[in-house]
Amino acid sequence: MHNTRLDPIGTSTVLAFQRDEGGDWVAVLDCGHTQHVRHQPPWLNRPWVVTEAGRDAMRGERMRCGWCEQAGADEQESDAP
Ligand SMILES: [Zn+2]
Image (cartoon, rainbow, N blue to C red; front, side):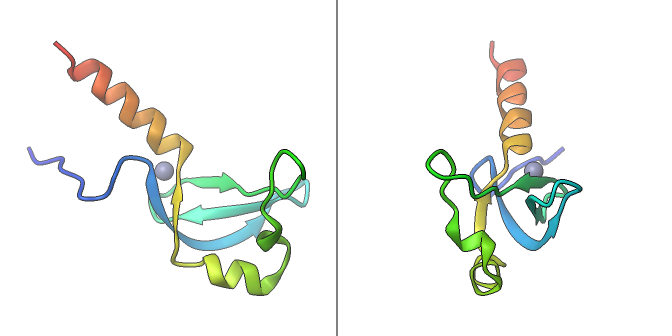
């Protein structure tokens, strides 16, 4: 069974943005997961997410998906001899 990924593990494409109940921005990724993209300086600096133009620019861009990274790490561990 082929499970080959051409893309590096943990990179997905941003399809859209939505807001959660708390008003935080969430990126919807093509892997089926969602990632919070909060702008909370100085820890989280994503000033682009608060503007519509910034979000438009990020649509179609690659973003690391923490869920996919976790899944990939688990797979690698279980495959190790
Ligand atoms: Zn994912």
